[in-house]
Amino acid sequence: MDDRDEKARENRPGTVLRRSATAVDGWVLGRSGRSLAAAAGEFLGLVAPTECVACGGQDSVLCPSCAARLRHSTVRPARVEDAAEALPLDAFDRPLPVVAAGPYAGELSASLLAYKNRQRTGLLSVLGPALAGAVHAFAPEAQRAAAWAGSRTILLVPVPSRSSASVRRGYAPVQELLRWMRRRRLEPPGFGVASVLRTAEPWTHVLPSAPVVAVLEAARARLGAGPEGAGAQKGRGRRARAAVRGTMRSQADLRGCTCVIVDDVLTTGSTVAEAHRALAAAGAVVAGAVVVAATHDPRGSEMTVNRINGG
Ligand SMILES: [Zn+2]
Image (cartoon, rainbow, N blue to C red; front, side, top):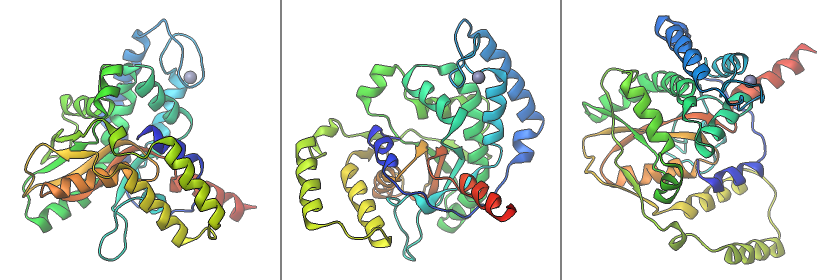
C-alpha cells in the first residue's frame, strides 16, 4: 500500500461486503500451520529485549496473546474487491478479484505498520503464514484463469516499493514476504514468484503537486460535489487510478503468463490497478490479487449484521 492510500482510506465510507466461501482452516491449522506457529513463537521470543508492537508488553516483538489474535484474524481469507473503488473492472463491470488474509485492524495492522515502517522484520514469521494462507485461498481461481488462458505457470508478482523507500528501509516489504514463503516452499504447486515490476522514479514527475491538488479540490468544492453514490465512487476510483498511472513497468515479456498481484494492504485498489495495467501491457493475463490485509473487509461488517440480527 502506498502512503497516499493510507490517507485516502480515512475519507472513505464503510461498505457492507459479501463474505467469501473460501477458507483455509485445513492449511493454516494443519500440521504445517501448527509447526509454523510454534516456530514463529520461538523466533519472536529470541528478538527480546523489545516490546510487543500491538499491546506494548515486554520481551517480544509480538507477544503470544497478540500473535494468537493475529492468527485468528487471518484464519479465513476473504474476497474484498467490492469496496475498493479504484480496482480495474472487467467487461461486465466486475472488479478484479482480490483475496485478503484479514481485516486491516488490531494486531494485523499494528504488525504490518511495524514491519514496514520500523524494520521489525521478525514479524515475517507471523505475516508470512497469513499471506501464504491467502495465496492458497485464491489458488483455485488463479488456476481456472491460467487454464482458460492456456498458461502453464502462475506467477506471484509483488507490487514494487519505490526504490527510495526500499533504500531507506533496507528491504522491500512485499518482496521479502514472498521470499519468506518461497524459502519454506509454501506457495501452491505450479506457482512461481517473479519480481518483474519496477517503479518509474521519481514519482513526483507524474503526480500533481500539493498546491495543484489544493486548487483542484477548491474548484470542485465551489462547483458543488454531487451526492455520494455509485457515480461519485466511480469518479473517486478514476482519480485514484489516474494519480498512479504510468508509475510501474514490467521488466519482462509476460506473454503466456498468468499473474497474481501481491501487496500488503488493499485500500482504494489504485496500486493494484497500476500493477494490473503494467502486467497487462507486458502481455500477462492477471487473475487477481492477494493482500495481507484490507481496510474494508466483509468480516468487520458481518459482525455488525450479526449483532443487529441477534438483538
Ligand atoms: Zn501483545
